[in-house]
Length: 514
Image (cartoon, rainbow, N blue to C red; front, side):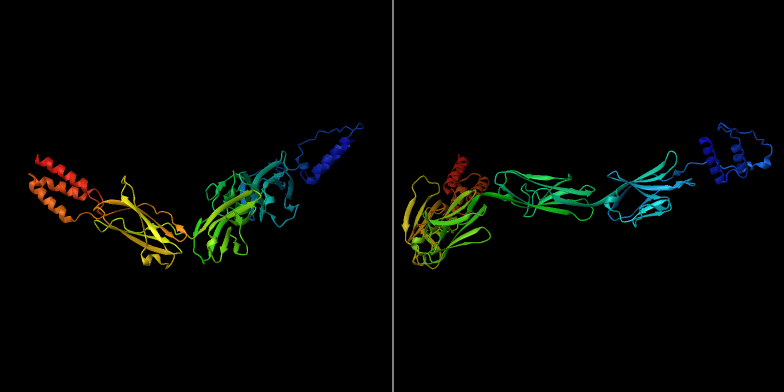
Protein backbone atom coordinates (compact mmCIF):
# COMPACT_ATOMS: atom_id res chain seq x y z
CA UNK A 1 0.00 0.00 0.00
CA UNK A 2 2.93 2.35 0.69
CA UNK A 3 4.25 1.94 -2.86
CA UNK A 4 0.76 2.62 -4.21
CA UNK A 5 0.45 5.87 -2.27
CA UNK A 6 3.87 7.10 -3.43
CA UNK A 7 3.04 6.34 -7.02
CA UNK A 8 -0.22 8.25 -6.82
CA UNK A 9 1.54 11.25 -5.30
CA UNK A 10 4.17 11.22 -8.04
CA UNK A 11 1.56 11.00 -10.76
CA UNK A 12 -0.48 13.73 -9.17
CA UNK A 13 2.55 15.99 -9.14
CA UNK A 14 3.23 15.28 -12.79
CA UNK A 15 -0.36 16.00 -13.64
CA UNK A 16 -0.21 19.29 -11.73
CA UNK A 17 2.72 20.42 -13.81
CA UNK A 18 0.67 19.89 -17.00
CA UNK A 19 3.64 18.29 -18.70
CA UNK A 20 1.97 15.18 -20.10
CA UNK A 21 -1.43 16.46 -21.23
CA UNK A 22 -4.81 14.67 -21.05
CA UNK A 23 -3.42 11.22 -21.56
CA UNK A 24 -1.70 11.44 -18.23
CA UNK A 25 -4.98 10.98 -16.42
CA UNK A 26 -5.64 7.89 -18.39
CA UNK A 27 -2.21 6.51 -17.64
CA UNK A 28 -2.67 7.25 -13.99
CA UNK A 29 -6.13 5.62 -13.95
CA UNK A 30 -4.93 2.55 -15.70
CA UNK A 31 -1.95 2.34 -13.47
CA UNK A 32 -4.24 2.51 -10.50
CA UNK A 33 -6.49 -0.29 -11.78
CA UNK A 34 -3.51 -2.45 -12.59
CA UNK A 35 -2.85 -2.94 -8.95
CA UNK A 36 -3.02 -6.57 -7.96
CA UNK A 37 -4.29 -7.92 -4.76
CA UNK A 38 -0.79 -8.29 -3.43
CA UNK A 39 -0.16 -4.55 -3.89
CA UNK A 40 2.17 -4.87 -6.89
CA UNK A 41 1.54 -2.61 -9.87
CA UNK A 42 1.26 -4.13 -13.34
CA UNK A 43 1.62 -1.97 -16.47
CA UNK A 44 0.00 -2.76 -19.89
CA UNK A 45 1.72 -2.34 -23.22
CA UNK A 46 0.45 0.66 -25.16
CA UNK A 47 0.22 1.05 -28.90
CA UNK A 48 2.13 4.10 -29.93
CA UNK A 49 0.78 3.97 -33.48
CA UNK A 50 -2.27 5.94 -32.52
CA UNK A 51 -0.66 9.36 -32.26
CA UNK A 52 -3.95 11.08 -31.74
CA UNK A 53 -3.96 10.00 -28.12
CA UNK A 54 -0.55 11.67 -27.40
CA UNK A 55 1.00 15.10 -27.68
CA UNK A 56 3.42 15.84 -30.47
CA UNK A 57 7.08 15.17 -29.67
CA UNK A 58 7.81 18.91 -29.66
CA UNK A 59 5.59 19.24 -26.64
CA UNK A 60 8.01 17.28 -24.44
CA UNK A 61 10.03 19.55 -22.01
CA UNK A 62 13.72 20.24 -22.56
CA UNK A 63 16.19 18.82 -20.04
CA UNK A 64 17.04 21.19 -17.10
CA UNK A 65 20.43 23.10 -17.32
CA UNK A 66 22.10 23.87 -13.95
CA UNK A 67 22.35 27.60 -13.09
CA UNK A 68 25.86 29.09 -13.02
CA UNK A 69 27.29 32.22 -11.42
CA UNK A 70 29.02 34.38 -14.04
CA UNK A 71 30.59 36.72 -11.47
CA UNK A 72 34.04 35.97 -10.01
CA UNK A 73 34.68 35.87 -6.30
CA UNK A 74 36.10 39.21 -5.13
CA UNK A 75 37.83 40.73 -2.11
CA UNK A 76 36.61 44.20 -1.10
CA UNK A 77 38.34 46.72 1.20
CA UNK A 78 36.04 49.51 2.34
CA UNK A 79 36.59 52.26 4.88
CA UNK A 80 34.24 52.55 7.77
CA UNK A 81 30.96 54.19 6.66
CA UNK A 82 31.42 53.41 2.97
CA UNK A 83 29.11 51.50 0.58
CA UNK A 84 29.70 48.20 -1.24
CA UNK A 85 27.84 46.11 -3.84
CA UNK A 86 28.18 42.31 -3.87
CA UNK A 87 27.50 41.02 -7.43
CA UNK A 88 25.78 37.63 -7.76
CA UNK A 89 25.04 37.57 -11.52
CA UNK A 90 23.79 34.14 -12.67
CA UNK A 91 22.69 32.51 -15.91
CA UNK A 92 20.14 29.71 -16.41
CA UNK A 93 18.55 30.57 -13.09
CA UNK A 94 15.19 29.15 -14.23
CA UNK A 95 12.83 28.68 -11.33
CA UNK A 96 15.68 28.57 -8.80
CA UNK A 97 16.19 31.21 -6.14
CA UNK A 98 19.42 33.01 -5.13
CA UNK A 99 20.10 33.06 -1.42
CA UNK A 100 22.50 35.53 0.21
CA UNK A 101 24.13 35.02 3.58
CA UNK A 102 26.86 36.60 5.80
CA UNK A 103 29.54 34.51 7.53
CA UNK A 104 30.98 36.74 10.25
CA UNK A 105 34.62 36.63 11.35
CA UNK A 106 33.43 34.99 14.55
CA UNK A 107 32.05 32.09 12.46
CA UNK A 108 28.37 32.97 12.96
CA UNK A 109 26.12 32.59 9.88
CA UNK A 110 23.27 34.97 9.04
CA UNK A 111 20.91 34.27 6.13
CA UNK A 112 19.93 37.66 4.74
CA UNK A 113 17.92 36.99 1.53
CA UNK A 114 16.03 34.14 -0.11
CA UNK A 115 15.21 35.37 -3.56
CA UNK A 116 13.65 38.79 -3.17
CA UNK A 117 12.62 38.19 0.40
CA UNK A 118 14.75 39.84 3.08
CA UNK A 119 14.80 37.58 6.12
CA UNK A 120 16.33 40.32 8.29
CA UNK A 121 14.88 43.59 7.01
CA UNK A 122 17.47 46.35 7.29
CA UNK A 123 17.99 49.78 5.79
CA UNK A 124 21.64 48.86 5.26
CA UNK A 125 21.03 45.82 2.99
CA UNK A 126 19.02 46.06 -0.24
CA UNK A 127 18.69 43.85 -3.33
CA UNK A 128 19.20 45.19 -6.83
CA UNK A 129 18.60 42.45 -9.42
CA UNK A 130 20.99 39.70 -8.47
CA UNK A 131 23.29 42.10 -6.63
CA UNK A 132 23.16 42.96 -2.96
CA UNK A 133 24.01 46.46 -1.72
CA UNK A 134 25.37 47.32 1.75
CA UNK A 135 25.23 50.99 2.77
CA UNK A 136 27.11 52.52 5.72
CA UNK A 137 29.65 49.76 6.33
CA UNK A 138 30.35 49.05 10.01
CA UNK A 139 33.10 46.95 11.59
CA UNK A 140 30.62 44.13 12.28
CA UNK A 141 30.00 43.77 8.55
CA UNK A 142 33.48 42.34 7.90
CA UNK A 143 33.62 38.67 6.84
CA UNK A 144 32.47 36.50 3.94
CA UNK A 145 29.30 36.94 1.86
CA UNK A 146 27.91 33.88 0.04
CA UNK A 147 25.58 33.80 -2.96
CA UNK A 148 23.97 30.32 -3.01
CA UNK A 149 21.61 28.34 -5.28
CA UNK A 150 20.09 25.13 -3.97
CA UNK A 151 21.10 22.77 -6.77
CA UNK A 152 22.50 19.30 -6.28
CA UNK A 153 25.19 19.88 -5.27
CA UNK A 154 24.66 23.52 -4.21
CA UNK A 155 26.21 26.30 -6.31
CA UNK A 156 28.01 29.05 -4.33
CA UNK A 157 29.93 32.25 -4.93
CA UNK A 158 31.87 33.77 -2.00
CA UNK A 159 32.99 37.40 -1.62
CA UNK A 160 35.22 38.75 1.20
CA UNK A 161 34.76 42.14 2.86
CA UNK A 162 37.64 43.80 4.75
CA UNK A 163 36.48 46.84 6.74
CA UNK A 164 39.18 49.46 7.29
CA UNK A 165 38.84 51.69 10.36
CA UNK A 166 41.00 54.26 12.21
CA UNK A 167 43.53 53.20 14.80
CA UNK A 168 42.74 53.45 18.49
CA UNK A 169 45.25 53.12 21.32
CA UNK A 170 45.05 52.51 25.04
CA UNK A 171 47.76 52.37 27.67
CA UNK A 172 48.57 49.11 29.39
CA UNK A 173 50.91 50.66 31.96
CA UNK A 174 49.54 52.74 34.85
CA UNK A 175 48.86 56.40 34.13
CA UNK A 176 51.53 57.42 36.67
CA UNK A 177 54.52 55.25 37.56
CA UNK A 178 56.79 56.13 40.48
CA UNK A 179 60.16 54.38 40.50
CA UNK A 180 63.36 54.70 42.51
CA UNK A 181 66.49 56.12 40.90
CA UNK A 182 68.66 53.42 39.34
CA UNK A 183 65.82 51.02 38.60
CA UNK A 184 64.07 50.42 35.26
CA UNK A 185 60.52 51.19 34.12
CA UNK A 186 58.49 49.84 31.20
CA UNK A 187 55.86 51.85 29.36
CA UNK A 188 53.40 49.89 27.26
CA UNK A 189 50.34 50.56 25.15
CA UNK A 190 48.31 48.51 22.66
CA UNK A 191 46.73 49.69 19.43
CA UNK A 192 43.88 48.43 17.30
CA UNK A 193 43.10 49.37 13.72
CA UNK A 194 42.74 48.07 10.18
CA UNK A 195 45.21 48.19 8.54
CA UNK A 196 47.40 47.48 11.61
CA UNK A 197 48.57 50.67 13.29
CA UNK A 198 52.14 51.87 13.68
CA UNK A 199 53.01 53.10 17.17
CA UNK A 200 55.11 56.20 17.81
CA UNK A 201 56.54 57.17 21.20
CA UNK A 202 57.36 60.76 22.11
CA UNK A 203 58.01 62.80 25.23
CA UNK A 204 56.03 65.87 26.14
CA UNK A 205 59.04 67.62 27.68
CA UNK A 206 61.34 67.17 24.67
CA UNK A 207 63.54 64.39 23.33
CA UNK A 208 63.37 60.83 24.57
CA UNK A 209 66.15 59.73 26.97
CA UNK A 210 67.87 58.03 24.03
CA UNK A 211 68.24 61.45 22.42
CA UNK A 212 65.84 60.68 19.58
CA UNK A 213 62.85 62.87 18.90
CA UNK A 214 60.67 59.78 18.69
CA UNK A 215 60.83 56.00 18.44
CA UNK A 216 58.67 54.11 15.99
CA UNK A 217 57.64 50.52 15.39
CA UNK A 218 54.97 48.79 13.37
CA UNK A 219 54.43 46.22 16.12
CA UNK A 220 51.21 46.41 18.07
CA UNK A 221 51.51 46.41 21.82
CA UNK A 222 54.89 48.12 21.62
CA UNK A 223 56.61 48.95 24.88
CA UNK A 224 59.70 50.97 25.72
CA UNK A 225 61.93 50.31 28.72
CA UNK A 226 63.96 53.00 30.46
CA UNK A 227 67.00 51.55 32.21
CA UNK A 228 68.90 52.96 35.20
CA UNK A 229 66.55 55.92 35.48
CA UNK A 230 67.35 59.28 37.06
CA UNK A 231 65.52 62.56 37.34
CA UNK A 232 66.33 63.45 33.74
CA UNK A 233 63.90 60.81 32.41
CA UNK A 234 60.95 62.19 34.35
CA UNK A 235 58.03 63.45 32.30
CA UNK A 236 54.97 62.49 30.31
CA UNK A 237 55.42 59.92 27.55
CA UNK A 238 52.91 59.76 24.69
CA UNK A 239 52.02 56.66 22.71
CA UNK A 240 50.46 57.57 19.33
CA UNK A 241 48.90 55.05 16.92
CA UNK A 242 48.21 55.79 13.27
CA UNK A 243 47.32 53.68 10.23
CA UNK A 244 46.45 56.33 7.65
CA UNK A 245 42.72 56.05 8.26
CA UNK A 246 41.22 58.99 10.13
CA UNK A 247 43.08 60.89 12.85
CA UNK A 248 45.86 59.38 15.01
CA UNK A 249 44.97 58.22 18.51
CA UNK A 250 47.13 58.90 21.60
CA UNK A 251 47.51 57.80 25.21
CA UNK A 252 49.88 59.25 27.80
CA UNK A 253 51.80 57.90 30.78
CA UNK A 254 53.82 59.82 33.38
CA UNK A 255 57.09 58.70 34.97
CA UNK A 256 58.16 60.08 38.36
CA UNK A 257 61.57 59.12 39.78
CA UNK A 258 62.34 59.19 43.47
CA UNK A 259 65.96 60.27 44.00
CA UNK A 260 68.18 61.88 46.65
CA UNK A 261 68.46 65.67 46.70
CA UNK A 262 70.79 67.48 44.35
CA UNK A 263 72.02 70.94 45.41
CA UNK A 264 73.53 73.29 42.83
CA UNK A 265 75.01 76.74 43.48
CA UNK A 266 75.17 79.09 40.51
CA UNK A 267 77.47 81.53 42.38
CA UNK A 268 79.60 79.83 45.00
CA UNK A 269 81.23 83.11 46.12
CA UNK A 270 79.17 86.27 46.51
CA UNK A 271 81.10 89.54 46.89
CA UNK A 272 79.28 92.34 48.67
CA UNK A 273 79.78 95.22 51.07
CA UNK A 274 78.52 96.30 54.46
CA UNK A 275 75.02 97.73 54.39
CA UNK A 276 74.16 96.11 51.06
CA UNK A 277 71.53 93.46 50.44
CA UNK A 278 72.84 89.99 49.71
CA UNK A 279 70.95 87.04 48.18
CA UNK A 280 72.42 83.58 48.49
CA UNK A 281 70.74 81.07 46.19
CA UNK A 282 70.86 77.30 45.70
CA UNK A 283 68.92 75.16 43.22
CA UNK A 284 67.51 71.97 44.73
CA UNK A 285 66.10 68.92 42.94
CA UNK A 286 64.73 65.81 44.60
CA UNK A 287 61.71 63.52 44.89
CA UNK A 288 59.93 63.50 47.23
CA UNK A 289 60.42 67.30 47.39
CA UNK A 290 63.30 67.86 49.84
CA UNK A 291 63.18 69.95 52.97
CA UNK A 292 65.76 72.76 52.67
CA UNK A 293 67.53 74.45 55.60
CA UNK A 294 70.28 77.09 55.87
CA UNK A 295 73.22 77.34 58.26
CA UNK A 296 76.30 79.55 58.75
CA UNK A 297 79.65 78.30 59.92
CA UNK A 298 78.03 75.04 61.01
CA UNK A 299 75.20 76.66 63.01
CA UNK A 300 71.53 77.34 62.14
CA UNK A 301 70.85 80.86 60.95
CA UNK A 302 68.73 83.34 62.88
CA UNK A 303 65.31 83.33 61.15
CA UNK A 304 64.52 86.79 62.52
CA UNK A 305 67.41 88.34 60.66
CA UNK A 306 67.46 86.20 57.51
CA UNK A 307 64.67 85.72 54.99
CA UNK A 308 64.29 82.37 53.24
CA UNK A 309 62.28 81.99 50.06
CA UNK A 310 61.36 79.22 47.64
CA UNK A 311 59.93 79.54 44.15
CA UNK A 312 58.40 76.95 41.84
CA UNK A 313 61.61 76.53 39.85
CA UNK A 314 63.50 74.70 42.60
CA UNK A 315 65.27 77.92 43.66
CA UNK A 316 65.84 78.48 47.36
CA UNK A 317 67.07 81.94 48.41
CA UNK A 318 68.49 83.29 51.65
CA UNK A 319 68.28 87.08 51.80
CA UNK A 320 70.26 89.33 54.18
CA UNK A 321 68.73 92.80 54.03
CA UNK A 322 71.69 94.78 55.41
CA UNK A 323 75.00 92.98 55.50
CA UNK A 324 77.15 93.40 58.61
CA UNK A 325 80.76 92.38 58.95
CA UNK A 326 79.79 89.40 61.08
CA UNK A 327 77.57 88.18 58.22
CA UNK A 328 80.58 87.36 56.10
CA UNK A 329 81.39 83.66 56.10
CA UNK A 330 80.36 80.29 54.71
CA UNK A 331 76.69 79.42 54.40
CA UNK A 332 75.39 75.89 53.91
CA UNK A 333 72.29 74.96 51.89
CA UNK A 334 71.12 71.51 53.06
CA UNK A 335 68.37 69.45 51.38
CA UNK A 336 66.94 66.20 52.75
CA UNK A 337 64.25 63.71 51.72
CA UNK A 338 63.50 60.00 52.19
CA UNK A 339 66.16 59.08 49.62
CA UNK A 340 69.05 60.93 51.27
CA UNK A 341 70.68 64.25 52.13
CA UNK A 342 72.87 66.68 50.23
CA UNK A 343 74.52 70.02 51.15
CA UNK A 344 76.47 72.68 49.31
CA UNK A 345 78.43 75.71 50.55
CA UNK A 346 78.24 79.33 49.47
CA UNK A 347 80.60 82.07 50.65
CA UNK A 348 79.55 85.62 51.43
CA UNK A 349 82.63 87.81 51.42
CA UNK A 350 83.78 91.41 51.39
CA UNK A 351 87.07 90.51 49.71
CA UNK A 352 87.82 91.99 46.29
CA UNK A 353 87.38 89.80 43.22
CA UNK A 354 90.46 88.45 41.47
CA UNK A 355 91.75 91.14 39.06
CA UNK A 356 91.46 90.75 35.28
CA UNK A 357 94.12 92.25 32.99
CA UNK A 358 92.82 94.77 30.44
CA UNK A 359 96.00 96.11 28.80
CA UNK A 360 97.23 95.21 25.31
CA UNK A 361 100.00 92.60 25.11
CA UNK A 362 102.04 94.85 22.78
CA UNK A 363 103.65 97.81 24.52
CA UNK A 364 104.27 101.17 22.89
CA UNK A 365 107.48 101.97 24.73
CA UNK A 366 110.94 100.42 24.43
CA UNK A 367 111.93 100.41 28.10
CA UNK A 368 108.63 100.69 29.95
CA UNK A 369 105.13 99.17 29.93
CA UNK A 370 101.86 100.29 31.56
CA UNK A 371 99.91 97.37 32.98
CA UNK A 372 96.11 97.90 33.46
CA UNK A 373 93.50 95.74 35.21
CA UNK A 374 90.10 95.87 36.86
CA UNK A 375 88.64 94.34 39.99
CA UNK A 376 85.39 94.40 41.93
CA UNK A 377 85.40 95.55 45.55
CA UNK A 378 82.65 97.11 47.65
CA UNK A 379 85.25 98.79 49.86
CA UNK A 380 88.32 100.86 48.80
CA UNK A 381 91.47 99.14 47.54
CA UNK A 382 94.21 99.62 50.15
CA UNK A 383 97.17 98.28 48.13
CA UNK A 384 98.14 95.89 45.36
CA UNK A 385 100.97 93.41 44.81
CA UNK A 386 102.66 93.42 41.39
CA UNK A 387 105.01 90.65 40.24
CA UNK A 388 106.85 90.55 36.90
CA UNK A 389 109.85 88.98 35.18
CA UNK A 390 111.19 88.15 31.73
CA UNK A 391 109.03 85.57 29.98
CA UNK A 392 109.89 82.10 31.25
CA UNK A 393 113.07 83.43 32.82
CA UNK A 394 114.57 81.11 35.45
CA UNK A 395 115.21 84.00 37.84
CA UNK A 396 113.03 85.19 40.71
CA UNK A 397 109.94 87.36 40.28
CA UNK A 398 110.32 91.07 40.97
CA UNK A 399 107.68 91.46 43.68
CA UNK A 400 106.53 94.86 44.94
CA UNK A 401 103.65 96.26 47.01
CA UNK A 402 102.17 99.53 45.80
CA UNK A 403 99.54 101.98 46.95
CA UNK A 404 96.82 102.80 44.43
CA UNK A 405 96.46 106.22 42.90
CA UNK A 406 94.01 108.46 44.77
CA UNK A 407 91.41 108.06 42.03
CA UNK A 408 91.76 104.27 42.20
CA UNK A 409 91.75 103.94 45.98
CA UNK A 410 88.51 105.84 46.56
CA UNK A 411 85.35 103.79 46.43
CA UNK A 412 83.33 105.16 43.50
CA UNK A 413 81.59 101.89 42.77
CA UNK A 414 82.20 98.16 42.92
CA UNK A 415 84.36 98.13 39.76
CA UNK A 416 87.90 99.56 40.13
CA UNK A 417 90.07 100.30 37.06
CA UNK A 418 93.73 100.36 38.03
CA UNK A 419 97.15 100.71 36.34
CA UNK A 420 100.89 100.64 37.00
CA UNK A 421 103.85 101.73 34.84
CA UNK A 422 106.78 99.29 34.94
CA UNK A 423 110.11 101.01 34.18
CA UNK A 424 113.67 99.97 33.23
CA UNK A 425 112.65 97.19 30.83
CA UNK A 426 114.64 95.96 27.84
CA UNK A 427 113.46 96.76 24.29
CA UNK A 428 111.73 94.09 22.18
CA UNK A 429 111.57 91.72 25.14
CA UNK A 430 108.78 89.46 26.37
CA UNK A 431 107.70 89.71 30.02
CA UNK A 432 105.01 88.18 32.22
CA UNK A 433 103.20 89.62 35.24
CA UNK A 434 100.54 88.96 37.89
CA UNK A 435 98.62 91.25 40.23
CA UNK A 436 96.50 90.96 43.40
CA UNK A 437 94.61 93.65 45.36
CA UNK A 438 93.71 94.15 49.01
CA UNK A 439 90.87 95.91 50.82
CA UNK A 440 89.95 96.10 54.51
CA UNK A 441 88.76 92.47 54.52
CA UNK A 442 91.87 90.98 52.94
CA UNK A 443 93.56 90.03 49.71
CA UNK A 444 91.93 88.95 46.49
CA UNK A 445 93.11 86.01 44.48
CA UNK A 446 96.12 86.43 42.18
CA UNK A 447 95.33 87.14 38.54
CA UNK A 448 96.25 84.81 35.72
CA UNK A 449 99.79 85.23 34.38
CA UNK A 450 99.71 87.93 31.71
CA UNK A 451 102.30 88.12 28.91
CA UNK A 452 103.38 91.41 27.31
CA UNK A 453 106.35 92.82 25.37
CA UNK A 454 108.16 96.11 24.90
CA UNK A 455 108.60 97.87 21.58
CA UNK A 456 111.64 97.00 19.43
CA UNK A 457 114.47 99.40 18.56
CA UNK A 458 113.83 102.25 16.14
CA UNK A 459 113.79 101.20 12.45
CA UNK A 460 116.66 103.68 11.65
CA UNK A 461 119.18 101.53 13.47
CA UNK A 462 118.28 98.51 11.37
CA UNK A 463 118.46 100.54 8.17
CA UNK A 464 121.99 101.79 8.96
CA UNK A 465 123.18 98.29 9.70
CA UNK A 466 121.65 97.01 6.48
CA UNK A 467 123.35 99.70 4.40
CA UNK A 468 126.77 99.05 5.90
CA UNK A 469 126.46 95.31 5.47
CA UNK A 470 125.34 95.60 1.89
CA UNK A 471 128.38 97.72 1.03
CA UNK A 472 130.76 95.05 2.35
CA UNK A 473 129.14 92.18 0.51
CA UNK A 474 130.75 91.15 -2.80
CA UNK A 475 127.36 90.11 -4.23
CA UNK A 476 124.78 92.56 -2.81
CA UNK A 477 122.03 91.28 -5.08
CA UNK A 478 122.11 87.98 -3.19
CA UNK A 479 122.12 89.57 0.26
CA UNK A 480 119.01 91.71 -0.14
CA UNK A 481 116.55 88.77 0.00
CA UNK A 482 118.26 87.45 3.09
CA UNK A 483 118.00 90.81 4.82
CA UNK A 484 114.32 91.03 3.92
CA UNK A 485 113.66 87.59 5.36
CA UNK A 486 115.42 88.49 8.59
CA UNK A 487 113.38 91.68 8.92
CA UNK A 488 110.10 89.84 8.44
CA UNK A 489 111.17 87.18 10.89
CA UNK A 490 110.66 89.58 13.78
CA UNK A 491 107.24 89.69 15.48
CA UNK A 492 104.85 92.37 14.31
CA UNK A 493 104.33 93.75 17.83
CA UNK A 494 108.02 94.23 18.48
CA UNK A 495 108.25 91.19 20.80
CA UNK A 496 110.65 88.50 19.73
CA UNK A 497 114.31 87.56 19.45
CA UNK A 498 116.15 90.62 18.07
CA UNK A 499 119.48 89.32 19.38
CA UNK A 500 119.00 86.03 17.53
CA UNK A 501 118.23 87.85 14.29
CA UNK A 502 121.43 89.93 14.53
CA UNK A 503 123.49 86.78 15.16
CA UNK A 504 121.95 85.13 12.13
CA UNK A 505 122.71 88.18 9.99
CA UNK A 506 126.36 88.18 11.09
CA UNK A 507 126.67 84.49 10.22
CA UNK A 508 125.28 85.05 6.72
CA UNK A 509 127.59 88.00 6.02
CA UNK A 510 130.63 86.01 7.18
CA UNK A 511 129.77 83.28 4.74
CA UNK A 512 129.68 85.70 1.83
CA UNK A 513 132.92 87.48 2.78
CA UNK A 514 134.98 84.31 3.25
